Image (tube, rainbow, N blue to C red):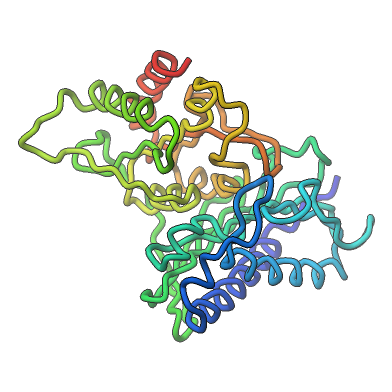
Length: 332
């Protein structure tokens, strides 16, 4: 099978995401916050708010134009769960699947509270058998609040490393951005977070977090603040924080916790939220499932995904056994 043209695909995604960023920013500056945060509809993936609907049209329009020269399938939050076919078989280069989350971190952005991220990954077309581990190109663009003047763009090609730029929103001028995860060998005096955003399982997650920290850094010292938590409601943003050297460890076990509580279907991290894991991996981070196994999932909009991200191999070597054992002890 012919290989994908990784460089041209990465460039195309960066251009698409820049258009989404610009249009979204203009929309946010011209509309009241109540317009962004209104509920438009509830889909199988997640609730769709006004701010989400604004960018869906941009994504589809770009794909329609792309489909004039290329055959591919778009899978995204807010569109048909089976995906949308663009182009026709045999058109353009090798067919592929594009998994996209136009806005990951909607809730923080729609209240102009914190950046969200536009996430996209491309994998060779293998039909419904296409998996997260098949992703060969990943691009993520920061969607800033109206108070920000810069936006970070991160991308990676499997086996060729990760890259980053910081864009001046006013001028559009990019400058290189160093993408170096923390090399610390301990969690002490760093950010390490266990996702605990929403109602449901919060007590169990908190007990798990305390157990992990006890084994990783020792007993709590009430006179010191030694490990910090950042509840960033954005899985892609969490991985970006680790890849950029700001965080050292992120764990999301919400699907496992909900299952233990007897909930068969719940809102948690989905494949489109974690499709840019390749960026963190190519930057040198270790991204696994909570049991230390390779992270994988179908390329869909409904499967729940639990994951762990470690800033470097030394931290992973220390923490993976602890996380595995404590997850099994508390959750199963």
